[in-house]
Length: 106
Picture 1 (cartoon, one colour):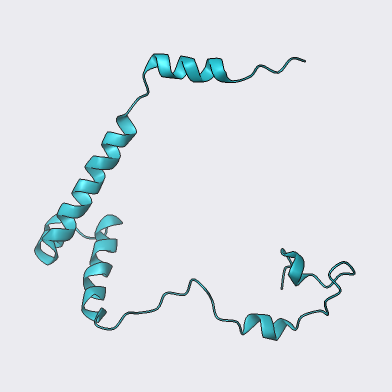
Picture 2: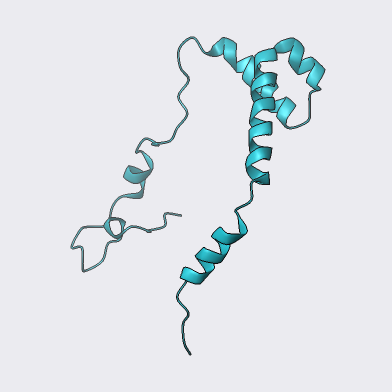
């Protein structure tokens, strides 16, 4: 079913455009379609294994044997994410932000 979320897709009296053919809309190319790059077929196996490792389907030892650089990269990503998650704003900053919020009177 074709849903009309945009004004230019709706055949109504304000736009004065004729109704669009559903087949013509479906034949348009997808803007976010993944396109394989030439020479990347060898990387597909490594990428697939990285996904399996991140999903917990492959052990870290197996992943290190296949692609040690990927393991080091994701270990750094994990450390950076943990550091950012542990970052707290100073108390005085939070108090200043809360004081700057206008109070709505009822």
